[in-house]
Image (cartoon, rainbow, N blue to C red; front, side, top):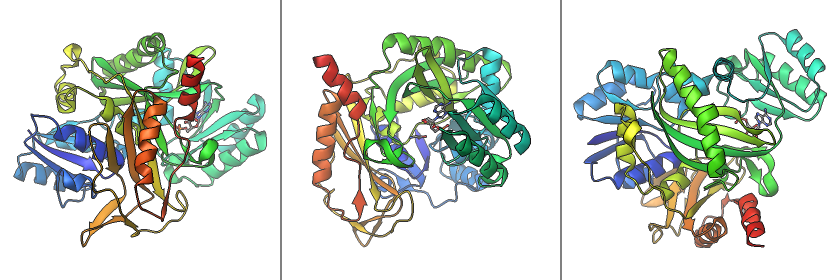
Length: 427
Ligand code: AMP
Ligand code: GLY
């Protein structure tokens, strides 16, 4: 099969790595790609926001399947446009991607299907939103409705903070994404991510993961796209997974199917494991980044076959096999990230790295004159397998010690919660 992979992050390098292992793959194109992806794929010189250009490229290169990594092209309807042109694409349609594109949409699905989630109100004007805040009190969570690159959520510990967040939304801080505001009950518990594949009717459980969103050790500092992740998430027992499938995932898939907008692709449930059981915080309609990096390290099955089963409606009989080992990924970011940072600094020491148990997935990188240069905020994802999360962490940080990049930093404590749990279980 000939594939076109859309995206340029660590997630897409990880996908390219897993897809490249498939005996079914004959040619991999990628756009826009990065330096790591360019080692595995031919970079297609197309603007992926120009759907007609993507279609023309696929037709002239006989591409059999387009794999869409990030959410923006999904929400923009790239899968619908490819489909209309007779080109198969992995990922949800624009309508189904509303599960990520609109928090109010997801809340509506939860209401319709009685899915456990935080109580909420949705508002299109400031006065009603502020009145609701007064009634409910803090702690409380304020969310811009639309896509805001992970920055549209304020977990407010005080009423004043919540009021400021509401005002910022209606003052246009998030553009159109903040025209509607969702205000939610604060959920207390441990967070976990759960990934499933769906073909519109069936849902195949993939794996669990946890990530670290804050920039600094101890989960302090500003929010980022994610500074590290590991899989599996020890908090997600099989009993909890079964409960999430029955109470959250299956009703979502059947509600979207019944509405005539079936969900195909990766459904990524952000969960809070509360004392009342698992509750849905949010959906994403794609693999997580860096969660994808740890998932592909643990996946034994052929990823390409699974993606094709999703597109062609065959997940009812599909299985995904996983290594029992844990995987952990540490993000190396440019100094200053997530605020301002320099591009173009040189990275050395990666040449000899790479095996079945250790991969350095590239995010913002490019090659110039044979040198590897940082080209974004999040730059590398050092990802290792191990017999436990603690063991995987040791392997990942050993490799980081060999990377020569004075202009980058990483957190030193990725996996701390899981490692504490492992240590407790040994006692
Ligand atoms: P989101 O951008 O929707 O992923 O939210 C960002 C983060 O805010 C989540 O990962 C949670 O840590 C936190 N969060 C979102 N909603 C809630 C909630 N209802 N209660 C507590 N924390 C929340
Ligand atoms: N790591 C969080 C995300 O991909 O949304």
